[in-house]
Amino acid sequence: LGRWEQALAAAREAVELYRALAAERPAAFRPELAKSLHNLGAFLSELGRREDALAAAREAVELSRALAEERPAAFRPELAANLNNLGVFLTQLGRREEALAAAREAVELYRELAEERPAAFRPDLASALDTLGTVLLNLGRPAEACEAFREGIAYLRPLVEGRPGARGKLVTALVARYLEACEAAGVEVDEELLQGAEATLEYWETLEE
Image (tube, rainbow, N blue to C red; front, side):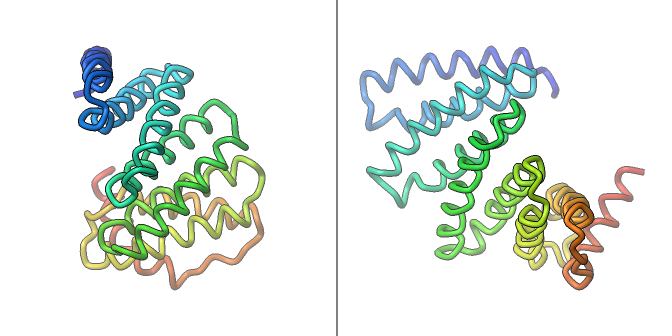
């Protein structure tokens, strides 16, 4: 509903409550604390409070990393999501090398998860590749960025063919940044790759008119 200040207040209270519960029963409530920190970071970012968002994201990564070491099968997806968030927030603050490290780790984790469960994790891998490509583009490495965006589109294409509403915003963003990176790098655009996303792009363009 766009009521970000109220959302932020609720998220802060959730973090405080889960922090108290996690202090009493770590095994039961650390995962919930990590999730609430993830949400808090997102709301802080929307309100332009980027340093605070970064602090929340860092804590979420630390918690989920510890949980993933204890129970990899259960918590690697959460760690990957929090790392991707961290990469986004670091990028917003211009801390590009740190953002690159976080984004690369998120992609590596999602790549492993997608090999195990393609249907479940390829969309998340595509989103992480979008973050990685954006960081690389900001670092003046357009050829590498182009490859990251291209790979993201390739993972999403089978999911959106015949279903133009599926993952439309992400596909649109990936294609736009892919074209930008290709132009900056002087790399030829893979037209065959983009053909599979045409219906989705046309669908979202119609909605925006």
